[in-house]
Image (cartoon, rainbow, N blue to C red; front, side, top):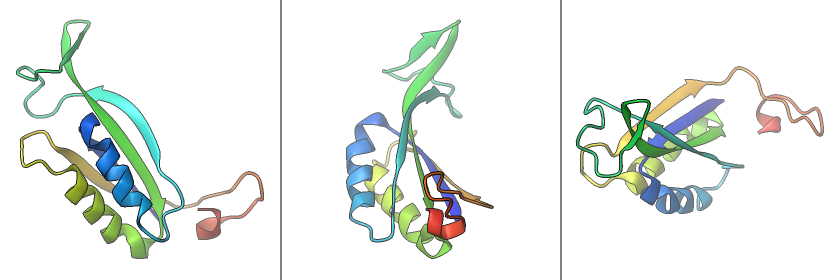
Length: 113
C-alpha cells in the first residue's frame, strides 16, 4: 500500500476530486486546508496569508491510500487535474504504508483500505 499526498492550489480541488472519483479502486480521499511556502517563499503571492510576520500561501492537502497497482494512475490523475503550467502548482509525494486497520471491523492490510 502507498499514501499519495498532494499539495495543490485550492481552486483545483474540485477538478482533482472529480478525477479521483472516476477511478475504480479508490476507496476514499482526505482533504485538508493548509498553508505554507515553497521556493518562492510566498513573497509575491497574491493570496498570501501573513501570520507572525511570515508569509504563507493557502493550499489544499489531498491524501489517498491505495494499492501499489493504483499509485501511478492516482499520481497521473492528480498531476493532470492540478496542472496549470504556472509556478506553484504544487507537489505530489508517494509514501509507503506499512499497515492499515479498519477500526469498525478489525480488517487489516489492503482489505482495510
